[in-house]
Length: 172
Image 1: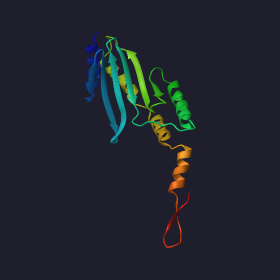
Image 2: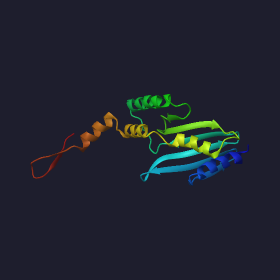
Image 3: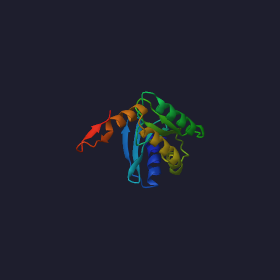
Image 4: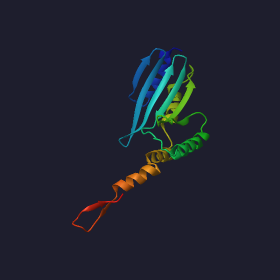
């Protein structure tokens, strides 16, 4: 198969649901980009990279990043949680990039001539459709401030009303 034939298979899979996507061709690879909204908010930023050798990489980036904290507590908790999520999966996996803070659901496979657009779509949906409970837990964890930041924020934002002429005192 040629790169164009591989790409046609991906395009036909997306056409099943009339999804809008962007396609960028770059030499021996093509990149498809498609974003999904849920309740008006970005739910997943997906891309599919197809190489001329038939390798297809599917990625669904979470629409938020997980910034690290000094104690590494968040990273360790997230990594352990992701390891447990991946344990039950055969191929598709969640990945956390410590340096960038990106969390990605991914799947990679070789495309064969016997594959149908429906098969490609089923693999894509495996990557895109993240378990709601896992997604919500990871989002909540990533949005938490670390203990030091929380303490500093509470200390600088605590205003205590005094009885002296309606003035406020900042309690540091």
